[in-house]
Length: 82
Image 1 (tube, helix red, strand yellow):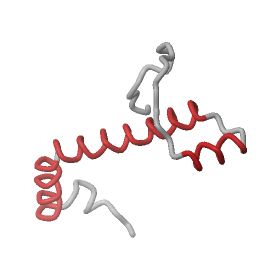
Image 2 (image 1 turned 45 degrees about the horizontal axis):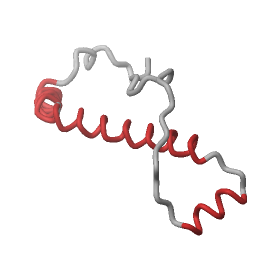
Image 3 (image 1 turned 180 degrees about the horizontal axis):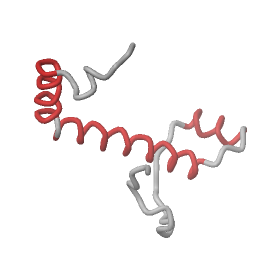
């Protein structure tokens, strides 16, 4: 189940942004939906930052787990036939 990082049903709010004029011109000429593009990219950035924060918060536990597996192996090591 994917992690829900925002409420997709939350109401829309207007925001004032500054955008490179040439990028804006090209986006409009291609009829791109800037609001949708911004939301999609924000979701990606938020997921990336959440992932990075989780890895940082759990770095010690991950390192301990990896050290234990290197030392002791996994429970199924004796059961593998390949």
